Amino acid sequence: MSKALLFGISGLIGSSLAPMLSKDFDQVIAPGRKPHGHNDEHLQTPVVNFERLATEHRDLFLGADVLFYCLGTTRSRAGSFADFQRIEWQLANAVLGTARECGVPKVVLISARSADEMSLFGYLRVKGHIERYAKELGFGKLVIARPSLLMGERAESRFFEGLSISLARPLVKPLQKFFPKAAPIRDVELARALARSAQRAKSSLWVIENDELVSLGNEVSKLGQI
Image (cartoon, rainbow, N blue to C red; front, side, top):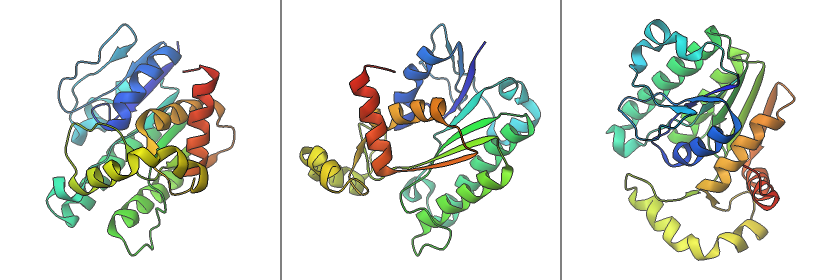
């Protein structure tokens, strides 16, 4: 029986990815802090305590073929950069660390375009730090997706991102054609690319930049798959 773990089902990408994974795997486990309504015959959404994943919820990780990490917060939601950094790190440490301890062989991790521990921008430094941590854990296969601006309907409002999306929405396809590395990517495109990357990953590390994510997402769409 094939089994996938999905962390972040309540977010923009996780909610798009969940129904796709339900078609690819016999069992999809999408843990969260609160009850979620996305259950079906293949998808389960148990409520967990992220601070006790390694001690109380190890059974969720056992036997998983792949873990999709779509978790993340924002500085405004966290309240300060220090809290944003703390929350991001605690989530990554709890989920990825437990996955490694439980022998999950493959991880697909959403990061960010230009993520770098040495970046002048705090958000990108944090994402770069999480990338390094994931690499050091030594998973059999690690896919790191680095999307640019994400486009889709979020449950939470992000003013500046929303403004950027409103301005960019009519220009998505031209931007993807002429500026593929920096162009916005739709939530469904990214979700398709993540699902496909898990199937195609062959090397121990595959870092997928925005242009390749767009191409992979559109390729899957054209083929009528996922």
